[in-house]
Amino acid sequence: GTPLNVQLCAKYKRSFAYITMKDRLPIILTQVIDHMSREKENIVNEYGKGALEELKIAIGKISKLKNELQTNKPLILLEGNASDVTIWNAFLKQLKDEEGNDPRWFHSAWLATECYMYRRLREAFELTDTLTSFDPFRSKKQAALLDSLGTINVLCTYVKRLVEQQNCHCSTDIKNEFMKLLYVDLWGNRCDLSLSGGEKVLMEEDPLQKIGQLTEYILIDEAEKVWNTLAVNREKSDVIVDMVLDNAGYELYTDLCLADLLVTFSLASQVRFRAKVLPWYVSDVCIPDFQWTLQILSNSENSEVSALANRWLGHMKSGKWVLCADEFWTLPHVFNQMQNVDPTLYQELSNAVLMIIKGDLNYRKLTGDINWEPTKPFSEALSGFRPTNIAALRTLKADTICGLLAGQAEDTAAKSSEWLISGQYAVVQYSSL
Ligand code: F6P
Ligand code: MG
Image (cartoon, rainbow, N blue to C red; front, side, top):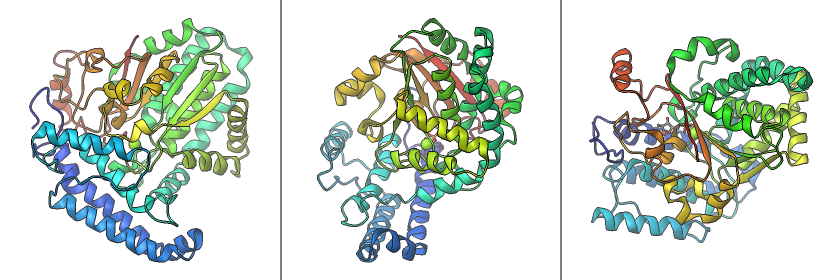
């Protein structure tokens, strides 16, 4: 496996990084190629006649990318003049200096190589005339949303009643409801499409009922502290909560449910959603995904689902909810480099009372993607990144963890050898400013 205190890397053959590089990423690229070949006609209908030729060229580029990965070629510089190209290429050059060699897929830090794959995939469309807005994962994300409608209906009934009858709730009630929706949101992170390869993730019928049974799988639970931060600022003006989004589909729905509770019960005056600027790790939310999600739901045949979605569109209009897409989230940098790479974003986050960070990849970036001693304190693993109070909600899907009690890693490993990567276990971790 990976030595302690170094970044995860595919050169360690018994790591999930290696499996990802060898098996998962080539499959994801193959699926993109297949999708584009299969949907050629539909794509041309949507993007215009010129798209046919450019689609073929893009397919060629993606095949080449897959080949570079599988044969462990050097990571070549990005092309074009998109605003992040300079930052990316500087990063790649620095990596080369640090490693004393050309960075390569199976030799360099896993975080860097995997992020790079999604950025190169984007390049295949970015440099065209007709396909610049093409998202090779869009239909997967949409299918995932439709697949989870049953669960969404159940959750919707609950949340709609909660937010509409807001007057009857004392502070203990609000806390209980907050906790419930926080856990629903946490477990919503089980459903990313890069791990399942787009296979249907079995959804719970009633996610609220499941919370109790899942408690034992939460290895660290600092939800109380998250609540306390919000409770002391309740009813104040200018209480901003940033939510760094992860996956579209059911997880996004659970994010929105929690965010509705925050603004409805005056725990936040504004929630800012942080989306990605490019298709990322298959299922991550980009601006259009956020928009079609609300659109599809507001047109739902289920009148409760459409009413709740319309309420959410109202939050967008009134400015209680704000949708942002920042370049930083799709750079290869870990979060403790944000202050240098994107000081403006860091400053913005500093104006929030709380930053909720969703999902596995964001957690990896937050804690440096290092194979920490499992008992390494969470706030130390942030390595200086502290724009504000931080809450990380993550189901475990990569071989890094911190903040556990002594013996806890060993005990959990004895129960399940795949505990770090299966998404079965979760953490709610908190670090105060
Ligand atoms: O492939 C890397 C990885 O971080 C996995 O560990 C995880 O399965 C996936 O990407 C993304 O998970 P999430 O959507 O929770 O960030
Ligand atoms: Mg994701």
